[in-house]
Image 1: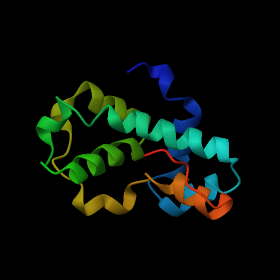
Image 2 (image 1 turned 120 degrees about the vertical axis):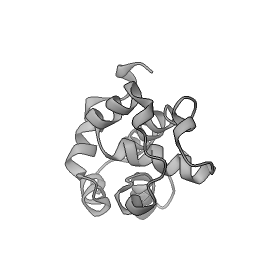
Image 3 (image 1 turned 135 degrees about the horizontal axis):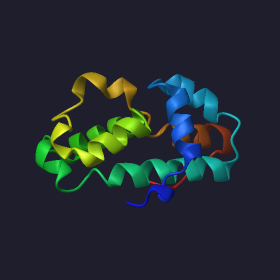
Image 4 (image 1 turned 90 degrees about the horizontal axis):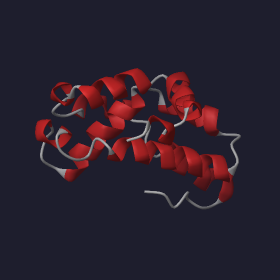
Length: 122
């Protein structure tokens, strides 16, 4: 993955959310639909990178589990994300105790609340 694909704008929002879904919701509340879509796209782009080998070699087997782990890693911010990219063996096997820290989907929820439709990005 090229670093440029995931913007500093995105990583700044993730950092400011500090693993808190309500905080992220507040940060995104006044965003345009285009910005919500952009945020959702960047989140997914970052997460997808972790949903294939060699990363999946260290994760629980289920597809939902893999997605949760990848989304949790993205939610932990840029430094942790790139640490895991460079050290796949340090990826957690599961994040069952940390699902409340997963920031994935908040942009979509805000988009539905504000604009009456989802981002359409999954």
